[in-house]
Each structure stands twice: as structure tokens, then as C-alpha cells.
Image 1: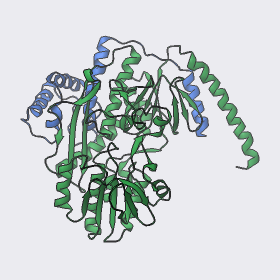
Image 2: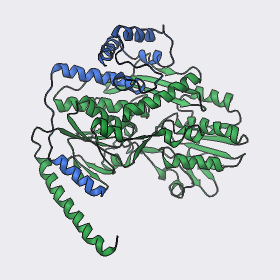
Image 3: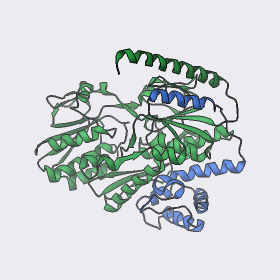
Image 4: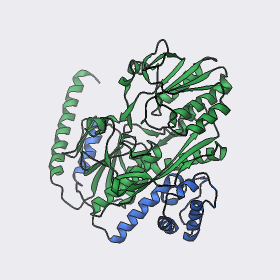
Length: 108
Length: 430
């Protein structure tokens, strides 16, 4: 049965075959890059900054931009102690930190 | 089913297959119409499942994504050593694929991809079905090279020596072997030369087994037989834990490269050193890219790993074929870890969305890695790193000054470690 399922599935695909998406704007391109950068936080803070249920690591989505910038810069400078974040924050430029903070503030 | 009924049924299947393939062949050569691009994802581990989800998310659901994975559920390798230690059960490390389908519209086929035909842009499934694609993402994990250790394949097939390196039924078998071992017995863990999946994994495993033995069978011993010249990850931290928490319980021997086993006698043979006898043998052979990558001619580094363009994780030998996770020839200081595979998947997904949209691929992608190892049922240690793409060298390198290790094992980090697992499972599959 699985074999027949695969064939039926392949047939469904065949009628919707195409190779390209509709072209997007420059804003869409920048948004894609920012989402991709922010996705490097998601393994610990949740997809799009939304923490998993019961998480002891804070959610980033909806956090005020200035607050996130301040915290990340403090981790980066070593002023705020942490186990992991002091080490990870040093890997991001101040510009990337501002970009991430603005993105997460806009998530609801 | 009786023999006289099965033949017509088989003919019917064949006819159905022939009809479907003819249709597919026609469509595959006439790529026209406004419908969605089709991306096929092969393998539902940390890399593949994340790729499937993020291809949908980052494209605004404009890409048709199909995930081909034979297993019913995702079983996590990270945390699986705690099943050996007795503080976690298989149910704690098992996550269903249902949310990928329901919440993200990923189609899933329970099958195995035998090989990719890159010039035809076709994936051939074990069932015989041939699936066309615009892009394919391969995240096949590792294949254990059983023939790298004489006698190991037969010993594994007989169930005498299990690897339990791919978490699943063998994890349970190894736990049972440890439970059946008498007090005063020896469990030997043989580690292959790097690179292999999860560099700190064998040392964490030694801690977990010792944690179990310490109370259940205190006269017993864990013997680590390492083909490498020293502990390959978190070395100083592990050695301190072994000395302080498991004195006399864990013995570490570097430069022990296993070449053969005699499962009935419980003996491991080595390239240089004397034979070692143990009661429970966990012999890990060398590893290479998962079979589908090797079968498809993509393992072009040492015939073991797949070289990729790190901007989009496209194979250096096949256009429109992207390879992720443990199967790739790694960049400097890039571990073969689940966290890293999840990161590869996001960079690749964004690049595929950009390419299919006619945009320039992000010239400066970033990756992180955070890896926790549990030294008992509560305390963990970590290693963390940030990796940036360096255009001049066409590879990822760690950002200078970033990353680092725990100072000491702690329960605080144990809490973060379990939180990491729950969160990355949700990020990968939820």
C-alpha cells in the first residue's frame, strides 16, 4: 500500500510542477536574511523567538528592542554573567545585534 | 495472501506504476505553469526535519515540501545516553512527525530513498517510486562502516554487539545488556578516529554508564578505548569528572584503534595494543555519509563525506542537490552535531528560497552550536561556538573571541541542557 501511496503522491506532484516562485521585493529579500539570522537563536529560544512551553530560557518574541540590545551588549562585554550567552554574544556584531533585536520586537 | 491471487495484484501494481511514471516523465521535462516549486527532503533527523519546516516558513508556504523518512517517529540521539544511564526513557526522546504535516503542510512519505539521479532530478525510493524534484535536500546522517572492524557486522547482526549510536532499539538493547551484567563486570566503549557523529558523545556515554554502575554495580568498570590521541571534545572537563565523580569506575586509554572483535569471547583487538576482554562491548566503527549520499556519488571527500558550497550547502558535484548535517565534509571546528545540522538546514532553506525567488543568496550566513553533555542524571557541561562564512576562503570559521566551555559541571547547566533538548525538538519538528 505504501508503494501505491507513493505513486499517487508523485501524481499529485506531477500536476503542480514548476521551478520558480513569484519574484519578491528588496524588502522581502532583507526580511528573509533577517529571519535566517534570527533562526540561529531558535534552537534555544524557540522558533521566531517563541519559547517552548515551560521553557526556563526566556522568549525573545515581543521583547522591547532596546531591552534586547542592552542585554546582548552586556553579555558581549561580559558585564552580565551567563553560562552560554557571554560566549555566543561575542560572535555577533553590534549591527547584527540591533537587527536581531528589531526583528524579535516585531514578533508577536 | 495466496500465490494465485498475488500475481494479478502484482501486475496491477506494475501497470499503475508504469502509468504514473509516464505521466511524471512528461511533466518533469516540461517545467511550466504557475504552481509551486517542489523540494524533496531526504531524512527526518535534525537536519532534514528542520529543512522541511523552514522551507515552508521562509517561503511563506510557497514551496511544496515532501519529506521522505522511513521511521514512524523522530528519536533523538542527544539525551539518548541518559536512557543508558537510567534517568530517561525512550518515550522522553521520541517526537512524532505529525506537527510538521499538520501545522506546516509538509507532506511525508514513509519510505527510504535509494539514490538521487541528479541529471534527471529524480529520487528513486526503495518502493521503486521515482519522485521528481526542483531541489533536493539530503540529510542522511551517518552510515556505520561495519567492515572497518573485522567481525563487527556479524556481531551486530546477531545482536551481541550493538552500536546504539543511532538512537532507537539498540539503545534499549545496550541498556538491557548493562542491566544483565554482573557486579564486577566491565563495559568497554571503543571510539573510532575522528571525524565521527557527536564528538563528546562517547565520553558522555561513559559518564552515564558509570553513573548507573556507581549505585547498581559498584565493583564494575567502564573502559574507554579511544582510537584518537586524546579526548576529542571537552577533554579537561570530562577528565576532571572521571577523577572526581567516578574514581576507579572509568578508565581512559588513548591510541586504542579497534580492528576486530570476537563477540563470543568478548574480545576487542587493536591495531597496536593488546587485546581487551569485556562483558558488555560497545564498539563504534568508523563512519561516513549516509548510504544514499554514497550511492548517489556525492561523497567526494575521501569517499566518506560530501563536499558542499557553504553558502547554500549545495553539493560540489551535483546542482540542485543540497547536503546537510553529519554527512558533509565539515568546515574547520564545525562539529557533527544535531544543533549544527539544524543550523545547516536553516542556511540551506533560506538559500533555496532566495534562489527560487530570483534573489541573491545571503553572502554572510551565520551558524551557532551549543552542545550539552550530561555527566550524571542532573549535571551538565557545554561547549558553544559561533561560525561566520568567510568569503575569501569559501568556508565557515569560528568568530574570533566567541565561544567557549563550562567552567565546571552544574545542575544549572543540566536544566539548560534539558531545556535545549525540548526547545530544539520543537524548533525542528513542532
